[in-house]
Amino acid sequence: MNVFKKLRNEYVIWHANRVKLPKFGAGNIVRKKAAFSGRVQKVGFRLEIYCIARRMKLTGWVKNLKDGSVEAELQGEESQIDFLVNCMQSLKRASVKKMTIIDLPIREGEESFTIVE
Image (cartoon, rainbow, N blue to C red; front, side, top):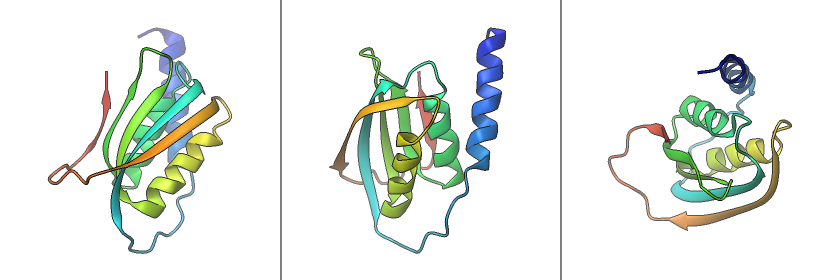
């Protein structure tokens, strides 16, 4: 890993751990697929989603797509997913130009959140 990428990743982890999480009430468990396009690769976007999702105990995955966008499947309380999506839309080092969200069936037995390479 080159020095720049290592520094960026350390900054992203530091930033994601500083995001103030509101108190979420018990809500409906849902699964959503979110696709973000714009300047969302090579800025730590996946790592930011991963860190915040893990902090909120969401399950699912996030990955870069060949067209330059980032896609994630997020499962957990709907208010938590909405919060995470809003965080990513307002991320200063990225520029989300377009975002789509679709509802998916819940995946039973999923226990963690991962970055798909």
